[in-house]
Image (tube, rainbow over all chains, first blue to last red; front, side, top):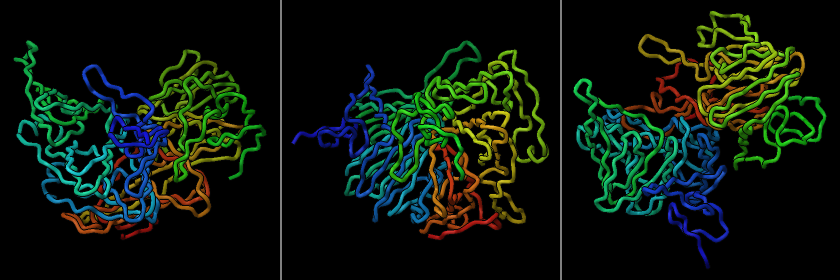
Length: 266
Length: 298
C-alpha cells in the first residue's frame, strides 16, 4: 500500500490525506526551503487536527493560533499554567513537580507546570502573533527549547531543564540562564511550541556552524552546541561596540523564530 | 435574546442579522457569506477575518475594512451621521470631518478604572479611519434597536451615534492578603462597557488581538475562560470567578498560595466571544474575599 511521508516529521500517512496525522503539516504542498537551506515550518491549516496517543489536537486561528486538545481518559498534557485560554470545568488539573525550584526561580522560569488530565478539553495559546510548531519526539531524541517557548508536552515526554554553560552565554546569549529539555523514554511524544513570527528550521551537518541572533533561537537538538561569539563593531564613536551572536554547531536541527527581542550591543 | 425583525433570505451566523444574501460579504458586519463555517470540535466558531476592502453599510454611510494584520476601519460619513471613539484610535481624517468631545459622566471613576477619559465625536461629511495597536481582528457588531452587549475594557474601536454607551462596575474581583495589606484584583478590569442600540440599527466596531472565537451557550451551560480572553458577551450571560487548585505536591508553594488558576465562569444562555491573546493572569497570593466565586481543589 502506498504511503505518503510527511516532509516535516517523516511520519507515514495513508494516501489521500491532506495533512499529517502525527504533526498536522500539510501533505499536499511542497516544503518551502530558502536558498541557504532554512526550511519554513509548515503553516498548519486552520482547524487542522492530528492525533497523539488516544487524544486529538486541533489548531484554530492563524494570527495567534489556539491548540485545542481533546484528551482521552488516561492521557494528559503539561504546560505553563498561564497559557490556558479555556477549559471544560470537569477537566482535572494537577501540578508537575519540577526539580530545582530555587534555580528555576533565579532563572525566571515558572516554578510550577500544570497538568491537564483526560477526559475533557482544554485550549492553549500564547501572547503574540506567531505559529504553533509541532515536533514529534521518538525514543532517544532530546530537544532543547528556549525558555517560555513551549506550549504543551504530552504525558510521555520527560521534562527537565539545563543550564546554559558559560557566563558570556548567559549574559549575552539572550536566552536566559536555562533551556527547557524534553526527552522521550519509551514511547513517542509530542511537543508543541509557539514561535513568534515565522519559524524556520535548518539541519546542520557534523561540524557545520551557523550564527544566529540569540533572541531568534527557538529550539535545537541537544547534539547541537551553542556558544556566544563576540563581534566587534567599529563605529568610530566611543571606541566601538560589541555585539553577540549564538554560534550553533552541528550535527542536528536548529529552529529559529523571525520575531524576537534584540538584546542590544554594548 | 430576541432576534432583530429584519427580513431577508440569509441570516448571518456572526451578527445574527438578515439580508438579501446576494453579495460576497454580509452588508451588516462584513463577514464572508460564501465560505464554510470554521467550527472546532468543541463548538467554538472562528470569527472570519473581514475581507480586505469589504464594505459595511450603516445609516447613510459606509465603513470599509482594509488590511489584514492590524485592520483599518475607514468610514465615509454622510453629513447626517456621526460616530464616537477613544481619541487614541484615530488614524486619519479629512479636514471636512468635525471633531469634538463627547461628554461623559463619571470622569473620576473612569480615571481610577484606567478607562479613556476623552471620547471623541466625529460628524460627517468626510472620511475618517480608525485602527488599534496589536495584530488581530476587527469585529463588526451591528446592534438592532433594543439589543445590548457587554464589552470588556479597551476592546472598543468606534460606534455609530445611535448606539448608547454606558459603563458599569464589572463586579468581578477578589482580594488577597499580604501581611496587613489587602490587595484588590480585577481580572476582567474594574469596569465593563455596555453598548445598546437606541434609535435605529447601529454599528459597533471592536478590535480583538489574535484570533476571535464565538460560542452560543445554552441555558445553564458553563465554560471556563481566561478573564483576559473575554471580548464581549450578551447581557444574558452570567459571569463569576472560579479558582482551581491543582493536586500534587511540589517545591516552594502550597497550592493555596501560588498554583491556582483564576478562571472566569461564563454561564448561558447567550453568546460569548473570546480572543486568543490575553494578559497573563496574576500570580496572586491567598484569596480572602471575592465578588462571588466557586472553588475546586483537584
